[in-house]
Image (spheres, helix red, strand yellow):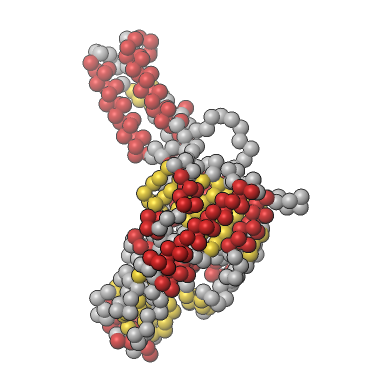
Length: 474
């Protein structure tokens, strides 16, 4: 039937069908056999606000992402604190889903409390999710962590294959040396395929000096960039650079605070009326009686503070649906600090604010054999990092709130064509072919049947052969 068409029309149809198939195939590799996925190293510099990249020179970091990819801003999870966001990076879950809601928590079921700086290693807090180091082990890989929050906790009686328990006195270089040793392996232990490394700066200095102190932040970011240089140097000297995928990111940004921007709870509500769980910039409290009355008092308290009953927390925050979310939360406006009383500002820089604020956003940079070179995107969701890492390691992802579709453009063997784009392209081709066949005077008996999509490698565009098989009649 196809051969009954005029030659020029047959050629045009072949070109259009070829275009569709080529788009579907554009993310495939060259057909050479791959020995397995490259190892993956995840590095977090705590409190690295996205716009630090533009404000301060960082030649080592710039060199790294010039050889790979840069995501200029990550929209992180609420609340924009260290523990919730580090757990989101390795689970792909919002805080309400993985259960690490804040730096200070109370569980009404177990009646236990969680405080950063205290005992945070009770598995009860971490067991609502399975982090990547365990998922990778389920696929037979060895894993390693250096002080990543939660990685020394026995979740389901398992930790990472190798880990360093948290100790702030251990230098970046010492942490890095341990990680590379584990990634190299030896005659007794196979190499770790996934490793995660945590470093406290520039968060620590951001709290002390505030992010607007250019002199102080310039110095600490110079040190952070030197650590990126150490990272590349260590990977190069051990032969790992170019063989491993390196992903550098952060958990949150930082906002400038001021003693002129204090919200005093005691001015609004007597302390006898509530139990305080967490203070600032997101206050979590439990009313001792009359929750509605406590809410009404707090709701009138201060124009730079938003108050929510648990049931009214906005869906976009993904914070309501967990038993550890307290009955009332208070969210300070950017740069405002909630205190019990007095005039003392606890810190010049803080985070934890609404995750829609650019000042709360971190960044992501990556390089390695699986990443494009010299590629930039404006933004991603931090929960997308987990499915991206699962793809890099070729391990099945646990249920999560992220999507690979937003991140696949970063990968050299993937394409960023998404389903809506593909549908639009198909519709456009249909319209063109309809016009052509109509003008050619073809009858329904002589109009060809075209089928391409069942044979195109659509898995690389987020589709599968079983889910898409496009048959076009004219």
